[in-house]
Image 1 (spheres, rainbow, N blue to C red):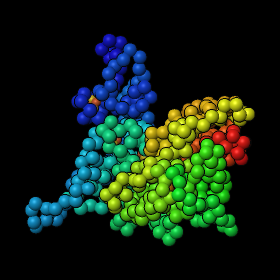
Image 2 (image 1 turned 45 degrees about the vertical axis):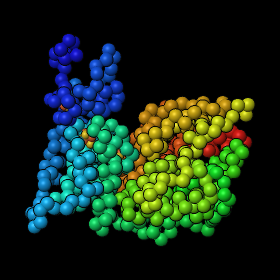
Image 3 (image 1 turned 180 degrees about the horizontal axis):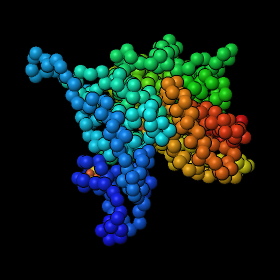
Image 4 (image 1 turned 45 degrees about the horizontal axis):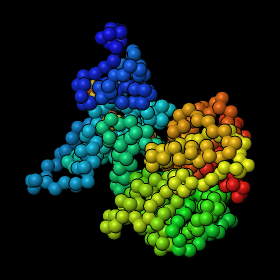
Length: 468
Ligand code: SF4
Ligand code: SF4
Ligand code: FES
């Protein structure tokens, strides 16, 4: 373009080989390195978001560069060990190597919903990766976890947008959780995080029980031994407004002729602890959950909360493997994933006259790679008018413990999410995560859009089948 069409076209580059990080831009809507992308007859190039534009594709990185200066991003070491070669922690070394791959292209910065709202209270994913490089350098002596904390370590929603776009596969969202784990292990976690850890330690649940009411498990758990089990999750188990989701899911599955085990021994899935960095405390929860479904002879476990599903698919196998040397004795399926694989026929049913859209929970789309299945389920409902919302996978601000640690930023992200609904004229937002359901309900209420319902796919399917 520069050579043939417009000689004044401005962009920056240097290495042409993915190393300098200067050529970051939005390519067909997604942040990436231009030098990695073959030119096509038709493509859209835009400057990165969340950075001031100087001209055309050139963005101003100075603000981030200035902030880096205060982080002491060099090896800080006074005490040299008496014995050489010195012993180093291999796990730390591995994390150090991953963080060292960062070329500061700022693709992650461009996609971070927190930086979109507030650039002053958060260093952002690139800054955290730079800090992590030194935090995991076995030779470094500075308390990098403390620096990260003052740079807004707990202001991340763990939405995974940064991980999705990083051209060097660094997974900043994971790195941020590892930095949090360092802070927790060093006894420096913020009060809200310590309270959560204490609660899970005492009750093996991530929220307090419903006052004066029985939990879903207290009312519905069964000890039957059967092939398919239901993992309920703390939010649906304890929140009386959300318990009907589990009731609906059970009815739909039973209507498909599936006998469901709901082991009473199941506890918190562990994801709230993972997100805030309490990694050591998860092991016991995972063992209890796996043993509960093993005892019930399940070879499939269905989750109705996408965060629990992410935990059961990604965290449980790793921890269980380390503890026992074995893989999980069952496979884990999200509710919609299960329905698509075990097709239910909704044809011929009266249907639901409803205009609805779908919000992709971060833990389902980026966490589990599932986004088509819920849409397939919704499209199968007769008379339901399904419309896509813009930025359907934009975080609602409810994850990563952000509501505990920085409610203000969480609400700002939610407000932006609500703005995508403008002019859509929908009657319902459907989503597979109970925390998103709670967060979106608050957002709609604040925008005086209370007439829009927030529903779980299980509720809609059960309604279509006339089960609730
Ligand atoms: S973490 Fe990845 S996306 Fe972010 S600046 Fe580094 S290389 Fe770029
Ligand atoms: S996980 Fe989401 S909120 Fe956290 S740094 Fe990455 S993009 Fe930002
Ligand atoms: S030109 Fe250096 S990373 Fe693209």
